[in-house]
Length: 460
Ligand SMILES: [Zn+2]
Image 1 (cartoon, rainbow, N blue to C red):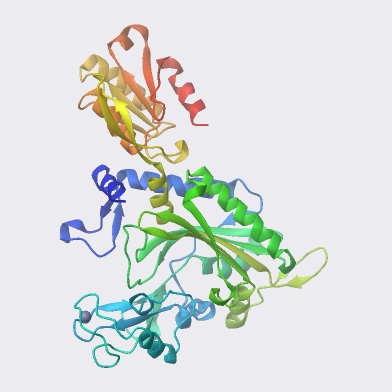
Image 2 (cartoon, rainbow, N blue to C red; image 1 turned 90 degrees about the horizontal axis):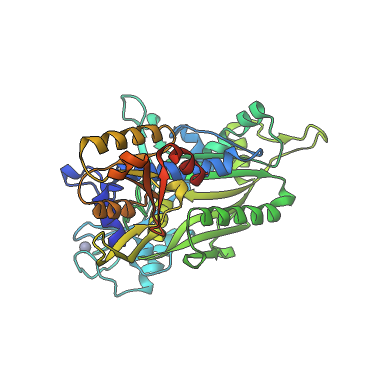
């Protein structure tokens, strides 16, 4: 993990947020290479799950929605974590974690707070080591809502309270009728969205794994109730294909079937897809059958008819939903961890050395081709610059002429660039360049005029 975090900082994938001001807890900025990788992940997901399918459409809903949305979805009431506060040092902790009890989605009722502490009477404050005694050195656990609250307009009063969305999913339910009316899609069909969501996590951490501001890729797939089992299996398979596509290995994944007593009450089946991160196995994606819970609640709260009518049979019903959900930042982290390799290699002088290489799938590599003139001499750089400029029309190209060629190969390996093109003095005579492939390190001589075709074939 440390190696990947260091690589991210050193090569401009991810920086600590607001670093010149000492940073900000669990806030991260994606740098020049990070934004390319992240955009590539999102583009590939959109292509696979929206553009290549006839039964999917996309939306991009507002981040701040009418607060009634969160009333209907249950977030205002239930989207909480139990929180305890040490009376001595005033640090706050999630009750479930500090008590050592396994966290479940079930919420604390008032009696459970005492129960938790009575189970572990010997608990000390992890910050200041004070022995905790309920109501003396420790406040009674309180439910803390994880939504980010803000105010609309200049007056900070309760009538103007609004919330940053804690998930993208509700946008698809709220826009369901509009999508249906404008696209004339027939059940089964799905709505997808990629966007930011915000949760005021009490214990964020593990680099970009758990942050208060994060990005999601979500699908709500609308079906007839009778089809839910089949559709659930289908989408689980689609998620597996996706994970393979971005280079995640089966042995690093775990599919956790959520038992009856831990599932949300409206869900008949939920699977957490966990990844074996270096800090522990934890949630990467999820898939849930949500019944008609969301549309039904929005129909009740809004007073609008959100049902679907089959034009042929005239049958009218509230669709049920399968929800595959993907974290963008967690994908980014898992993809880097899966791609990171340290391998024996030979230096340009033939000596044994180790290379760090990101074996990223070609489709998502932040830089696709590096153009490396052997020397900074004008006659070489003018040829190399021209090649770079021509390739930039269709590919993401980096031009690098500093340091030895061996060091430049290592730099490109480290960021996962699939191909390096070296322009040398022979190029001036034979009008050819050397292409080096990242994983095999094999080199091939190609005519400059054939380069564009050669590469576009490789990236097909
Ligand atoms: Zn304390």
